Image (tube, rainbow, N blue to C red; front, side, top):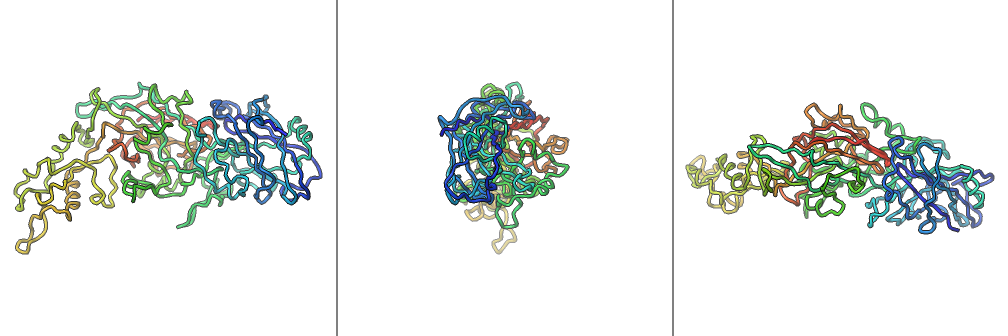
Length: 618
């Protein structure tokens, strides 16, 4: 038998199945005594466009190429045979719906084949366009909760994987209020003939199963007339945007939407330990966001990504670069300029990163962070803990393409070459000398002994140094040729000691402390970082009077990327200074608190659920 199905989807996709049949074993509790097939009527539907903040999205985002139904008993163990529909089993026929949240639906019948000794199904999961279906038919619901995937769109970009919408509501089989993941199937919704199931479908009786995409959808609109020159020291710096993409994104995502409890000290996050509805409401209590769950629309607007309770985030790019083997111990991915430029999915600036054109969107994995890490301003870097959108580009200086330049933003000074920057820093230098008596500092100003560079690990020690900062440092040619004040020779209290391999790191530390730092823009490159706001964001609470993010007042639901939501960022103006990039390979870790992002927000999430678009002035 071929069952024809088609799925159109925006906020969620509706699978409907219902029936009225008596004298069947209670679902999920009985064991069939002989091989048999039961039938489930199915209706697939698409939420209404622009209704309750939902949208249908682009047609390609709703294409269905494959459906997999997996059935489970009351204990969450797989039962019956997995049922797959593809190719000729799928159809594009729709008809209108009276449901204000559904524009169209199509109904058909799914056969459930059971062998003698198997348990009658109590729950069903539907996987749409699965990219990796390994283990779906043999895993328990508990196993599925802990399963992870990476891809949110097929390799050819033509379909999106989806699975059941997960939210908090009342389970009709148990009467308990809690998280609903697999859709309950009552015994009177299982039929012993295809015709009976079809008749029930035609009578409009349906069990609704909503599904949602794994992907979140992020867009940036940056019109060319929004970019203003930055004036410093008689020079005009014009930012030229090149690419953008989401940054600080989780490396994996859960197969189904997950809500987890904070693990005990030393334990890992367990996605199967689900908070109760009361615990979730308490977590979202005022002054935060309380509309996190929407049972009538079978939706929840929040979730925990795998890194949710990870309180280890880089403060600066050095934290990543200094790892042994240049590995990444962080759960989030921080991209470099080269990463972004080479990523085929990155959006290239031509006529703006338009949110009106679906090609201007980026499809991203779900990424959320526990509010405790966001609030930790003293010990952490909240800007690096939340998912963001990064715009990378380069500067023109006085209308001309710029090579590497340096800025002293504190003193409002511009240095167009390394030689200019070095000469200025040398004028502040009083740490090293060219003779053992400490009488000749002038000779120590020879540029050959010095470089303008980022302090090395041995010099920085435990001090976090943002990647854009460079300072005056000795080169190896200074060893044996320059002297540092300090030490004793047994006849005098203090002598001038020669710079050596053993003390050069300490000497460089003293140099750094005396001459301070400059900001480098390698090949003129820099970036702007925009934290992704979620539905709970309240500008009055989250933004200070001078335009900075007030991380300590952030609440759960203020920031993050949640699956099947659309985030649209309207950059209304760029008049601030980008954060400089020391090299094209430097991981982009946003500054902690010393950059203002002037924000007048308008936020969009669609259903695709719409997070209202927000305006950002940089």
